[in-house]
Amino acid sequence: MIAAPRVESSRFAKRFGIVLGGLLVVAILAVEPVARARAADSAVVVMYHRFGESQHPSTNVTLEQFESHLGELRDGEYAVRSITEIVTALREGRALPERTLGLTVDDAFLSVYQVAWPRLREAGYPFTLFVATDAVDRGLGGYMNWDQIRELVSAGVTVGSQTASHLHMANADRERNRRDIERSNRRFVEELGQAPALFAYPYGEASLAVVDLIRDAGFVAAFGQHSGVLGSSENEYFLPRFAMNETYGGIERFQLAVNALALPVTEITPEDPLIGDPNPPSIGFTVLAPLSGLDRLACYASHEGRASLERLGSSRFEVRLRTPLPAGRTRLNCTMPTDSGRWRWFGRQFYVAP
Image 1: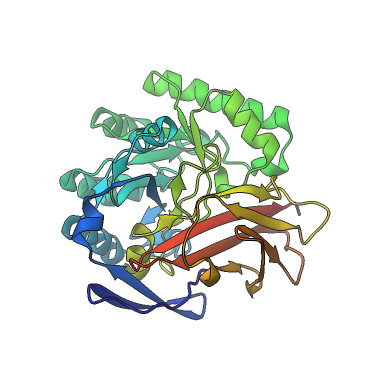
Image 2: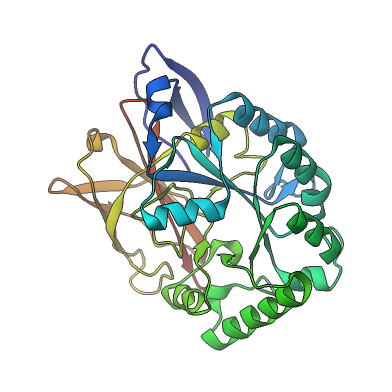
């Protein structure tokens, strides 16, 4: 469940009423020419899967939704950059343009080639395609083939890895994960001439052991599927992305996401997103920078809604869950409004083995 507290608008603000997860969210996207001209130390990354495949609503955006997203990027003051450029700039401490945005697509479905790519190419927007190689090798229906992927690569599209078999990595042992990655890397080299530098965890599921494996395998950055904003304090091997689908892909939610700011945090607990005992875990974080409005910070868990949030001192926050995390994936979103009307956002995804 994603929600944010209500704040008052400035004379520059434009109001959008958004219903997310059954809660009314009032998002205020301020139009501030001075702020837009500033450099930024954060970036938003958006994740898609399918385009115009209404039989798969949980991973699909409608054509109308996608074209409204492109219209927002075209008409607004956004800086669409490649994921490689974004990750490199954040790692090196270099400023990015205000409202920098990266686009990613998972799974190499055929609708990427037929629907999304022609529109992205026409708009001149770079994107990264994360590929699980087994589905392509097997010629499964509804997936791209290697010729089509090569065509995208030759046009400048970045390809990242999503393993070979698209397995549940947090629920597999290190050796199985290692063999799966080696198999996919071998196929990338055979078909595209090189192994990818970027990685996306299938289903967004990770653990400390899996993160270590991805780092050891030579990837430079890896992405989950939890909402949030890339900033200098983010773990570059468990980076957030805002997922778009038919339920959460309306233009109001898209505008809310692409205008979000990082909530810089450290000392995150639990460190491992794979949850065993105790459950519910002790969740907490420390806000790095002195920020105004921390009294308006609110956290929501996907399995129980708004969570109790306890502030310890000036910058330490502890999330008190009422119930254990269920088997599978659980997401936590913590948001707060800024004086400019944009939202600071920190998210995590946890995984409980079945």
